[in-house]
Amino acid sequence: MPIQIANFDISDRSVIRGEGRVRLVPRRQDAAHSGVFRVRVAVTFNPAADDYPAGSVRIDVDLSDSFKGQAESTSIEQVNSFGKHTPTSVIAGRCKVTITDGGPVPVGCRFWLLIANNKRPGDQGTADIAGFVVYDRDGNRVAYGTGPLEGDIEVAPGL
Image 1 (cartoon, rainbow, N blue to C red):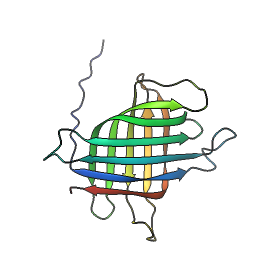
Image 2 (image 1 turned 60 degrees about the vertical axis):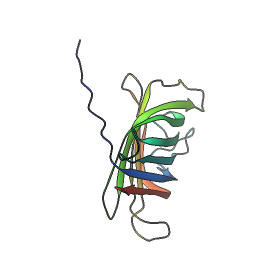
Image 3 (image 1 turned 180 degrees about the horizontal axis):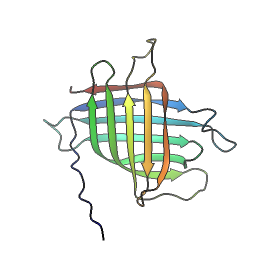
Image 4 (image 1 turned 180 degrees about the vertical axis):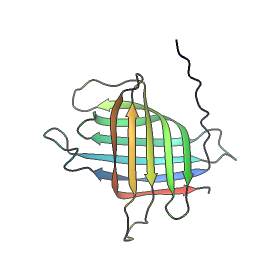
């Protein structure tokens, strides 16, 4: 029986807040899926005051080749933010999946979310980017997506 020793989840000072949607049309759109996922995030960690990262992540998924429903965080296990001009954050944790189309419900899920805060609302330039993956307890990928965000998610590293 193989053994795997887990990595330490070391987080750094971070504040990530906002929401938006990503349209992956037509590649992830079909007769049963709109080709859109939405992200809402409010995660903070201050190592001087907090024992662990806290907050919430919700990903609404309506993409082909993924479950149709929501993944809501049940814990934030790690958050790392970095960068000055285009601050970027990686958030990982556990989540509970709710299915909206009657399909099988994956259990024991974990998520990974990347946000690149490329511009402020109203500015011209490269859109913010959101990317995610959700795995079940058996290691099966049950949802994923990455693309330009319509909306705004602020990433504040090292505040």
